[in-house]
Structures are given as structure tokens and as C-alpha cells.
Image (cartoon, rainbow, N blue to C red; front, top):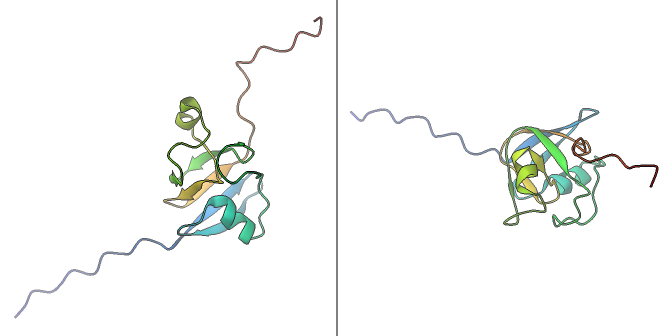
Length: 116
């Protein structure tokens, strides 16, 4: 009598859910599509322009999940990358995601001097 075979390993999901804050909109991203491509297909309006990682119009904070990029290094500084910023135009999800559209911190920028 042969030994029972273990159940087949679950296959990788063919899509991942993305939740956008503020607002809580959500959409699914099929394998091989960027976050922006999937948002447009789902009718979710996200900031966008170049679609190649250079203009930074779509910059967002990754609050939960993991992405990989279509290009070797998108238009993010090392610090921005380490702080969790992503460029959805060239990012593809590896997991379900929560992303947030906010302006990167300017707390270290000196205020404009109105006397000048």
C-alpha cells in the first residue's frame, strides 16, 4: 500500500487586494500589472503621470504588505525607500497591500524667510 500524498501546495494568488487611504477605496491587481494600471482598470483615480518611475507624482506610503519593482531602482532615494515610500506606477504587489497617499515629510526643511 502506498503512503498518502500530502495535499498540493497552495498556488500563488493570481491577484492581490489593495486598500487605499485616505478613503478606503480598494481594487485588485492581477499578476503582471502595476498598482496604477490596476487602479485605472478598476476606476480608482490615483495620482499619476509618467508611468515609468521618474516623475514621482504617484508616490505613496506602503503601510502594509510587500511590492517589487519593474525597474532596477525607481525614482526614490535610499531614505525614502527605507521609510516605506513606493511608486505605484512601477510597483507590483507580492502580497495584499494597504497604501496611503500623503505628502512626504517636510519637517526638516527650513521655513521660508518672508523678510527676504
